[in-house]
Image 1 (cartoon, one colour):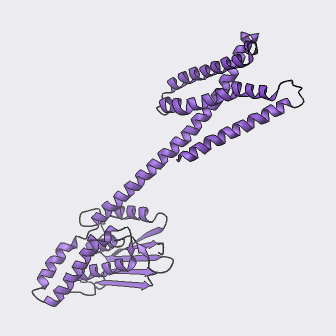
Image 2: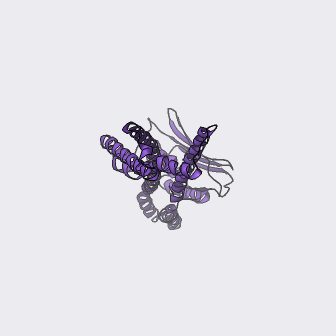
Length: 347
């Protein structure tokens, strides 16, 4: 919390406290004849109430809270608190005796002196508790800001860790497939090599930023699918469609690739027609990603080295799109589908 705000809180409290005392003394004096002058009343209020209030407040604020309350040393807190408030009351009583004479505090002997000291102790205690409350609020707010900053740093590190795990492991297979293709069709192999280079460039440079244009993500997906197709003679085993305008959306890089990776990892057969279906629908209000793959047995989407687990994917989405995304899974006897809806900000 900024020092100016802390200062304003204290000024606000003392302003309220002074106004409250003024009202109390004003009401107490109504209808009561008095021979006391204004300076006399002011001196009495300052010495009897003002001084112990301020000393007790800052005794708790600067010393007791940090030394004992924050460390949960309650017995020492009560002990030093009682001693401190009593000492402040005695200082206040001594000051009153110096200003108004000893007869003021001892008008009825030690009984009146003790009574007045107890009253001052109570006044000091009330202000001391207020000092605790204000310092506690400031301390709580400061701890909250520190935790928030730590959480932001943690989230940022987690995002970087997640992105580092998103590097597609199909690269090694793609290199081998391109190498084999060069013996049959050099021109086609060169085309695929360009796609691979584009993917590597995207991963090494563009994916390091926080956001990219959605068109770049769609290009990356297309190149990824094209390279996957090298591994099969069935050109129709993947269906990929994009509908709607792109509206210059900015999205985090490699947002959809983990789902697509898992679809290729767990697809039943690449010889089937449209074994994998991928569609992305873009409107001004939302982006809907849909990915479906066929399988023979129950899908096992797990956190293994060759795939991105659901838990990791959803954690990233919670960080990137808190309360701005919806994920839905559709599982049948022979297919596994996932639908992700996000509400991106248009930049």
